Amino acid sequence: MTARPRRLKARVAAPAALAKVARQLREKPPKRTGRTPPAERTDASPLDVALPARTIAVELIAGRAHYDRIISAILAAHTSVWIATANVKGLLVEDHRAAPGRRRTLRRGTYVSVISLLDGLAARGVELRLLHAELPSRPFREEIAEHPRLLAGGLALARCPRVHLKAVIVDGALLYLGSANWTGAGLGAKGSGRRNFELGIVTDDAPLLDQVQGMFERIWSGGECARCKLRDVCPGPLDGRA
Image (tube, rainbow, N blue to C red; front, side):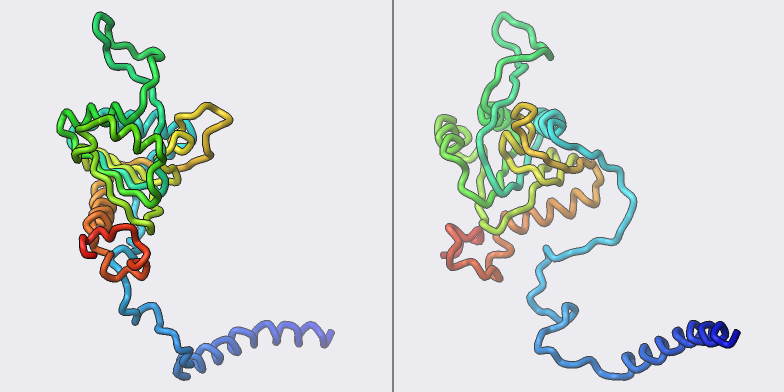
């Protein structure tokens, strides 16, 4: 009968012991480690952000839904399409445009390269930006060379080896953030069993759109080039300085 009170006493004493340790830690100055605490770092970038949590509406898309949702939104753009990706390859998409003597149809159409459809967007005055890390695949580069309008700036390309984000912004009103690169396997253009397993979200949330567009623009315009530690091996710093 004497053991039970001792066990109860030990359980009650533990919080007091922890409180004592907490007081000692608060009173004792932190030990110097030689590393600058995160709050005191001077090399922080405007791209190093963590926004407060809030409620927004998003759509979750996976696999083939990238093709159905993102590619369709791009081809329906009116003013601008901004794409950020680590990898760039050509991809084929269905072309439902009306041909001479044939009405437009929503049924399965012929497949064409998305580059030819981007050329159509450029012809309508849609601003096209592609921010990428790796050199686009050779077929992609060869096909762009066959479209003088895109080659002359209709499709603006900017390369930064540090880019790993995947984002698509259409008309400043629709935002995709996810894992998919600008490839057929990534965007679900390949058949089931061949495409990648990808996940992403789509939203029209204005504050998030503003934030991501600001980040995109900072990289695009070379705002991070001066502080970049990989500048010496960069194929072409975006701030335009040699």
